Amino acid sequence: MKSRPLLLSFLVTLALGAASLTAATTKPVQPNIIVIFTDDQGYGDLGSYGAPNIETPHLDRLAAEGMRFTSFYAATFCGPSRAQLMTGSYAARVGHARNPSPNSNFGLHPNELTVAEVLRVAGYATMAIGKWHLGDAPEFLPTRQGFDTYFGLPYSNDMWRYHPKMPPRENEDALMQATRARAAYTGYSGQESYYPPNGGFPNDLPLMRDETVIEKNPDQRQLTTRYTETALQFISAPRDRPFFLYLAHAMPHVPLFVSEKFAGKSARGLYGDVLMEIDWSVGQILARLKQLGLDEHTLVVFTSDNGPWLGYGIDGGSAGPLRDGKGTTWEGGVRVPAIFRWPGKIPAARRTDAVAGNIDLLPTFARLAGAAVPADRVLDGRDLWPLLAGETPRSPHPYFHYLGGSPEGQINYRGVRDDRWKLVLNVGADGKIAARELYDLGADLGEKFDRAKQHPEIVRRLAAAAQQFHDELRQNLRPAGRRSRG
Ligand code: MG
Image (tube, rainbow, N blue to C red; front, side, top):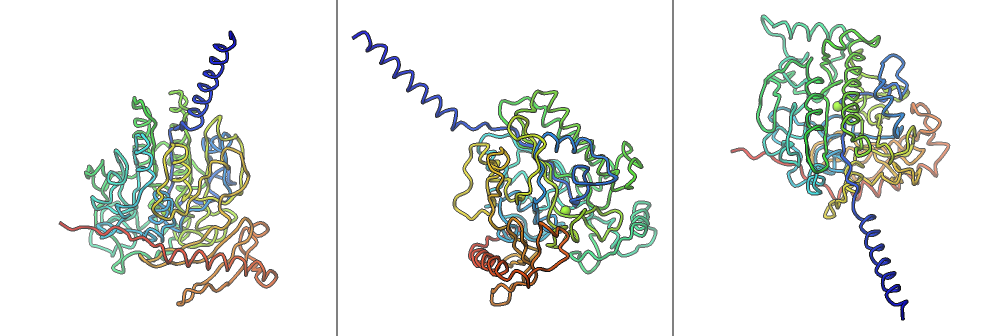
């Protein structure tokens, strides 16, 4: 009989053990999350991605301490890429495969659930710093899409009265003269196509805090420094919950500006100086995390919104070994650097060629936060955590899709890839996929040699996957938000 209390106690211990085990496995770790998002930075513009003459020691350290992706995809240009990062879906699916201009009548639909909203519901403090570009009307601002606070430019830093395409005026001021001189010097082609035919943006460039314009035409040489200082303040604020920081630099999108700290420092010229300053910013953030003891509680992600803007000559970045650049669905337009670092959780010094993209950030972060992903809509993104944790080397995407810019409700579908092959395609007016070219991205990263004739069975398989995706996407398009004028 004496054994009964022992047995009872054993059972209680077992039950308690099971309970605590359950708690341990279901309670999310909830790391802090920092996304550093650069603008128009190319695949070849970091030391760890082979840049020959741009010094990026802090970003190189980030890669050495984390996982570096070599097949990570954004959209073809700024607004769509941000729509993807925020919603976990291809930009065309959410009606945002285009750039809103200043005073735009559209933006990301308020009903879209952004990564910031998902994390805020899970208990995160949230802040957006830098470029937004998902609509500048009040109902589209970051503060209406899940961010507690915002500091930055609501659209691109070239959407102002100092754009080189502005029609010449009498008695232009020094900044306008410098803009024209720089454009002439760099090899600027003037080919960017999405600008209004009258040639520019007559507006001032607003710098906003939350929903208030605090400056017009701010000194862009100080933007990277000011964004960094604001980020450090947010990271350092005392709080009893995790944080999500979205730091979307204006740079290195043209017009390029750099502070006196890095002016003239790079052999690569102004573009290299700007990258050095972004690298400095990353170093400041890493130092602050270490100082606060947050290294092992913080996931840091660094990536770019699209490939280099080659029409700007030497003020554009480099796609390294990849074909073409921004605005295209060649690899140089959409394949971007991506580094994930979380000491103790993500194995250090790893490189992966598994296919992933900025559509995957929302589902990955939701999993880490213990939050549910939106279940009432189609999400294209997948949870990357098994890959990041080293549990599998495989991509969660059997197929990945290349979509160019398009008006709301339309799909500009250009290609599909698996872990090796990329099919370049057209879509007929009847919605039928027509295969064009096949590239072996393993052996031919630069997309030089069409292999369609040699591999008809691969063309057929990829075309079938493309048709299935296109048919599904056409059935599940969501609208952009429409500006309410009052
Ligand atoms: Mg961009």
